[in-house]
Image 1: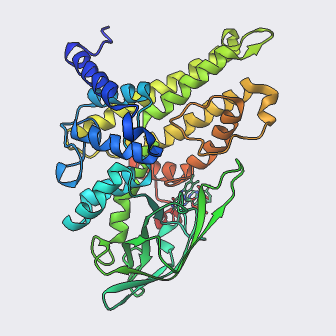
Image 2: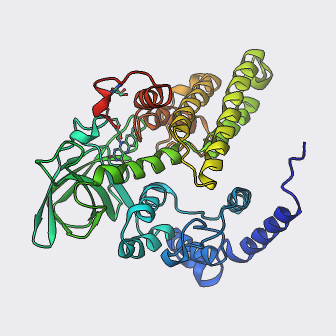
Image 3: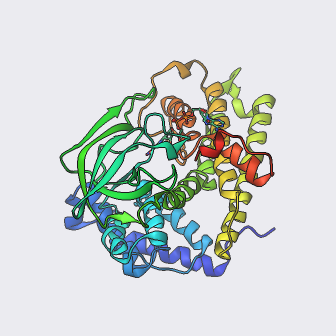
Length: 403
Ligand SMILES: Cc1cc2nc3c(=O)[nH]c(=O)nc-3n(C[C@H](O)[C@H](O)[C@H](O)COP(=O)(O)OP(=O)(O)OC[C@H]3O[C@@H](n4cnc5c(N)ncnc54)[C@H](O)[C@@H]3O)c2cc1C
């Protein structure tokens, strides 16, 4: 089997390397700026060269390249090797931008997409409320029109990154007399205004990634609505699809699995590398089987997308697989680090796509792996939908109202 990329891609890799050697790390005046300013400057240059924001049209600040997963992979690898900033990732780039490209007005795309893909604008997602998580359509935050502005009152919860966010995309009940799903609109809100009270929630890993957000007479212009009045539920499905795709991304699972294999080489059992222990090898081989299956399932999803076909439930299944594998990886890491598992976690996000370094990082990943299985719709809800829509099982009466 030929596992090389081939001459065309080898040449492309050289091109990317040469670009990086001229542009990262920053030199001269650029090197004196803070990291965010350096990253924004670098992204601007990399977009002009066609290496970042590849799927975003030029009209909205992207580089509008033909889809090429191998080139994208080479760019990721080379940016990683050079420790250069990639696309900003996160809620804005992975969820809001694709939603605006699909459902937004022309002026909304022009106003919000370019700054978001550069990392100048950050977003948070105002969906969940106390009592409205899986049953999201029961949300109660209200929006009323007052002249040319919406006035919004209510409370959101589990709002990731709200402390730093410039804007929120928010589900709000604007048609109180319409049915549960039909009464919701999708509004964009400036977070830096009076009436917004963000209260961080401390998590078991010590960090405060989530927040409660209280909205009291918060105002947003009438046309900062994505889709029509009362169509917010449909728009929110688009965002959720992209949220699940970003969690279900196979390369993130591969990265943490590689970290696990490294940990198994470095850890000792009875004075010998843990990776030589038959029971550990067996567990590693089992997880690697899942990782590979997940990777090829990701290729199936990508193939459908490239052909412009609906990937059906594959995205949902990939999200479920990826969070399950992430938990298996973390559990084995816990067994390998032994008594060190009682240390304090490192804090921070515990991101799936980043292989932790020390024991504290693995503890953090373990704790965070529980949350990732809940974000974007819980594992149980994914199973319900796969069972009902994929396998044709009868519908659960309660689940009919849920996400
Ligand atoms: C890491 C993380 C990040 C998040 N970020 C955000 C964010 O930025 N913005 C935002 O709006 N929200 C965010 N959330 C919230 C997330 O969307 C909700 O936690 C999730 O939808 C579940 O809602 P809930 O917590 O109210 O749990 P509930 O809906 O109360 O569920 C509790 C339990 O009951 C089960 N359950 C509920 N209904 C059913 C059913 N019909 N069938 C079977 N089982 C069921 C669930 O699976 C779960 O195990 C985040 C959550 C996490 C963990």
